[in-house]
Length: 338
Image 1: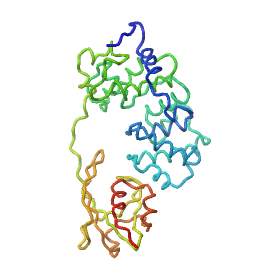
Image 2 (image 1 turned 180 degrees about the vertical axis):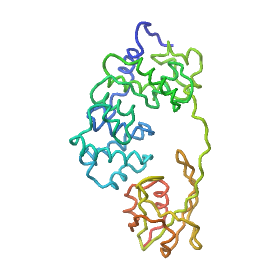
Image 3 (image 1 turned 30 degrees about the vertical axis):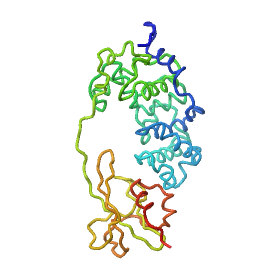
Image 4 (image 1 turned 90 degrees about the vertical axis):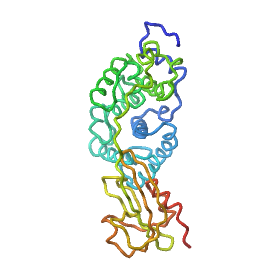
């Protein structure tokens, strides 16, 4: 166990560790504007840092400021987001940018309370944006920190439970430093992403292990509690491949539901009487298991596709759109028409 002076607070020990071992070269740390922090925080929801790094740089090149993001076509945003998953985040990102233009003089609000009123921004994200961009001391509670605090404070139960979440917020508040808010919030995330990992935490190297309840009781792997298991819904999905020369027909999905506002192969509403089955496979989403069948058939039965915006695209052009991964996979495997 690392030796730590008993009179040093949780925050002091964590910051001392972060100064030596933390991440200091993340792209959103180099220029901590509210816009750059906000984009990073939204991308980091449900997505690991290693994946975000590539997308983040390209996204900022395409949308360097809030005005550019607000005024571009939604398809451009979805294209830049394609592959990150949880596409509702991208829709909310642009909607927030538009609301900022309309209601906040073209800037992100400078208080967490105002940020909370915008789409896709919850309490932890709002606090992280203000903390990182203004060096303010505010509690955050991302997935990594929930794990750290559940173990350090010995808080049992699933963090998604309201009472457990309240206890974790209280633990986060109690451990705040007096200053260095931006560094501290990053240190919290770094500890959870490295030493205090979900499996096999490195307690011998942890700066706050000496008073960690889970470490003392050897129950690290039991905290935080697991989400109660619920069977996923299984949904059969039939995607229709209509082709004209080198073009393929795509449908703009509705604004709600699976793959909201994204371009997709038209979804059949009933089993076609004719058509060649190109491929069948499963695709897992967080809440539903899709059983996808791709069927190629001539576009002679418009009643078989639901109402919506339909448009023909050259295959290579289609692949530059924001597409769900299964649709991209299908298009990439289609033979080229000459």
